[in-house]
Length: 264
Image (cartoon, rainbow, N blue to C red; front, side, top):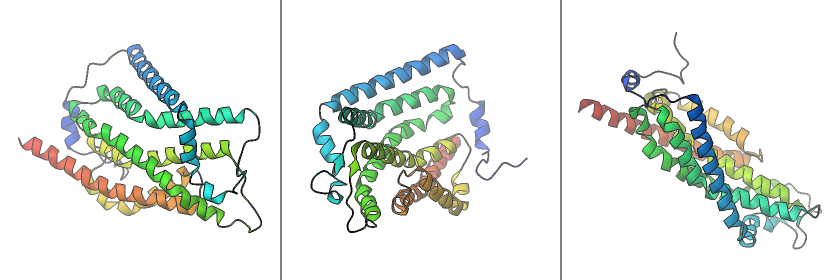
């Protein structure tokens, strides 16, 4: 039976399957390793968040800068109960700690996946692990840079007599969702290169169906952007489409390297 176009099986994977994987370990040991890596990741997130807690004031000023031009000079950012300031600082510290500790928990994730792969499948991880970190941080930076455009477009429809009173908790949560959405969106090359390394896609297939891929990218951007506005959606979809084109090149290079290794 022919598989759908996005799940072709390459012939070279037969050779990869013949290579021995790491000896199978009992499920209990596998779960224990997962628990250990999750605990390590949580500890690093907590440590990073604790350190960031003491730099809350400059971080608060930095992260509220994109919306301040659209707020009244006084009283634009508000709280609605007496406990809210504490939880605002807690949430902002946790979100920043999650991003700051990303290199560690991303590497832990790849280290957990690697033993289940063949040596041939494991080779790209040396590239994919640092690339995952770099792309995630690039997505976060882009999200922060586009925030003024997002606010400018949305608040351009505000009636002249109205003024914005923004609840700080909602604003901080929106920032976290925005950064996470762009960070995940920028993982597209990593996903495609990993699928190529295990024989699910190849560069020829990616070139053939690039139009369908762009449509899917636009749908994904519309789903993951928390504001759901067309400006942010297009700003998210455009780099994803460019990253897809870059992925075609990277996958092609991987295939060329594998072909050269097979000849030697």
